[in-house]
Image (tube, rainbow over all chains, first blue to last red; front, top):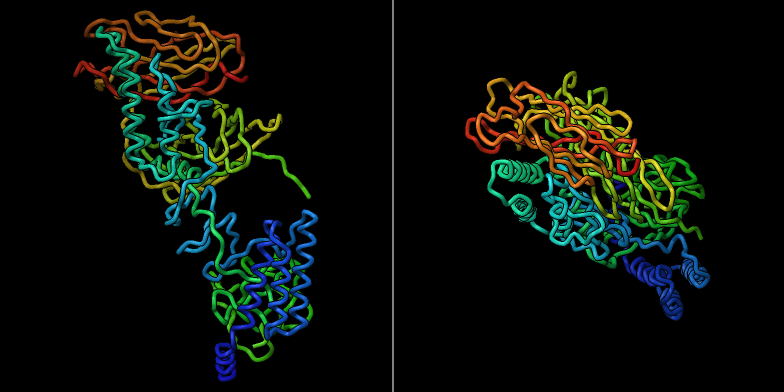
Length: 339
Length: 249
C-alpha cells in the first residue's frame, strides 16, 4: 500500500499540460470529421501546435497522421470511427447528438420517458403532433362517438393537425397535464350538448349518458393510471436537452501519456479497439483479460489495445463503476496506466 | 456506406396498473420511436402469463396510424384469480403494422408486478356485452351485472362501427339512431317511470343487430349507460370493446 500511495502522489503531481494540449488538438480534428466541412488549415494548425508541445514527437506525429487520414476520409465522404462525437459527463463518454449530460448522468436525448431526469428539457424541434384518436390512456377504451356526439375531435382525429385536442395538448412539451385534462372534459361535454340539445326524455337520456361518459373518460385520463401515457406523450414532444457541444472530449493516449478525463488524474482516456475514447481508471494488469472487441468485456468495460500491460488487447474498467467497487491498486506489479 | 430505409420501431414504458374488483387493468403506452410512421397498426394478441383476459374480449384491436414519436395506448384487463400480489408476470403484446408497402409484425414484452388491490379512480357500471358473429351479421346481448337492488337500469347502448352497415335488429321498446357508417345508438323508448324496457340489475337483453358486407371483425368501442331509477337521472356508464365489422378486414 505504501507503494500505491507514493504512486498516487506521482499521478497527482504530474503536469497536465501535455494532456491538455493533446485533447485540444483532438477536439479540433473531431469537429472536422463530424461535419466534414471545416477548413483543413485548422488541422495543420493543430499539427503545428502539437509539434510545438512537450509531447513526444513520435506520438504527436502519429496523432497528426490520424488527423490527416481523417480529413482524407472526410473528403471521400466517410466518417472515421474515431471521429464520432465523444463528450464527457461525470466520467462517462456520451454522444451529444443523441444523449444529454444531466446532473443525474447521461440521458437519452430523444424519446426519453424519464424526463424528470432532464431539468433542461426543451421542445423537440422535429415534433409534429399527429393525433391518433380516442385511445385507452385512462385504462378504458371509449368509443370516438357517443351516438352523434363527436369525441374524436376532442381526442385528436387522425390525419388532422389535432389543434386543441387532448393528444396534442399532452404532446406539447411542458404543457400542464391538469389543464389539458380539464380542456378535454370541457370539449367532450360541449360535444354532448351540441349533439343532443333537445329537452325530451329520450334526448335527455342520450345527452346525460354522453355527459356521464365524458366525466368517466376525464376521470380515467386524469388519474394515476394514465400517468405513463402522459409521460410517453411528453417524451415525444420534448428533448432531454437542447443542441449542445461538449466542453470536454476524450481521445485515447498511450502508456504513461494518456489524457485525463474530467480533470480527474486517476481517470485517463484510452482508445478502444473500436476506435472510440474510453475513460478508464487504472487497474493491475493481472486483473485484466484478453479481448478482441468491447462486446467481450463486462458491461461498461471496454477493450483497448494500447496500455502499459503489453501489446495484447485487454478489457479495462471504466472510471465510474456501478456495482462492485473499482479494481484498486491493491496488488503489486504493472498496471494499465503505468502508475 | 449503408443507408437504412426509414422504419417504425415500437417501444413501451412502465405501464399504469390498477388492481380493482378482481381485475387487473394495464394501461400500456405503445410508442413509435422509429423513423417512419406505422400505418394500420393492429394488436392481434395480448396475454399476461396464464391470466384470463377479460378485455378486449375479441381481437384484432385496430390502433390506426402510429406516427413517429407518437403514442397509442391499450388497456387490457385480466382476471386476477390465481395471480399473487407482488408476483411478476410477463405481459406480451403482438401485432402488425404497415410501412414501406410492407406488412410487418411487432412484439412488446414487459414484466409487470401485480399491485395491491385499490379503489378505481372511476366508478363504472357493472355490465358487459356479448356478441354472436355470423358471416356479415353481428348480434349483441347486453348484460346488467349490477347486484339486484341496484338503482342502475340500462337505457342506452352506443356502438362504434368501422365499416358501412345497416341496423337489422332493434329490441322491442327500444329505438335506434345511426349514420350507417360509424355508429349505432340504441336507446329505450320509454317516456316515463317506471321505464319498463330498461334492463334491470341482473337482467339481459338481446336482439341488437347489424349487418355489413364486411366479413371480418375487429374490436371497437362501445358504451352502455344506465338510468338511475331512484333519482330519475343519468346513472353510471360502462365503456369497453366488442367485435364489430372491421375497417380493414
